[in-house]
Image 1 (cartoon, rainbow, N blue to C red):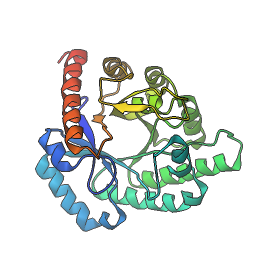
Image 2: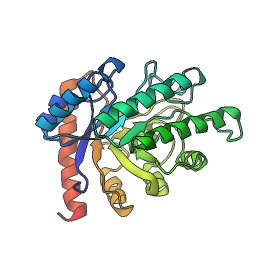
Image 3: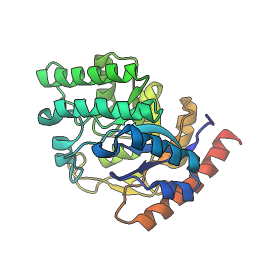
Image 4: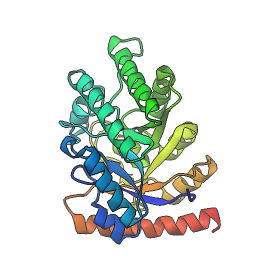
Length: 283
């Protein structure tokens, strides 16, 4: 695959991603796909979707898990509802993740992305150990399908995330690095974090943000168009180059309620990334 293909977060029927027609109109060739609703995850729909992707000249790099009941309304609600940490939904979500992995295999996708949630801080607690075992089981299922698991950054410090990856002890467990999430969640500096976890990065989001003016870790920061926030787009790409990351640069702009503005700002991000790519890679 070409070095640093530009991508975008997309969806068929759910989530914050743009529609495939927008991807086609912008001339973008790769997507991370937010998993379709359960009723759409059939062999017949997979075959039809693969044909549509082929017609548009689009390749899926990652299928991202998404579950009923998840909410990002506030950081507190995110902690209670997102990923595999909430005990009441953990088992059912693991079963559904197996199903999504199988659907992704039908699409010839070898990477599954996921928000794990707010990992318990006590590594000796039964709750922490149960989350570790859950991710082990997920990684083992993915391995049977020839897939890797990419955990999204943001809800935990990178040091905590690295400790968790070490405890899971699975060779197909990696990171999808979202620099804006570290700012939005009040976790820390994205460039320093990227250098810390660089060896595990297998996917990235080109997303930007401004830190909260309230209490970090309690109040949300604000997402802004890529290149206009505190990530430092050029330094971010330069650091990706330094750590040897060659994969897709996937734009994420989470304003589905404003589709025209979303499309325009993704288009602006494509232009910026193209310019930086030429500058940094000397092409």
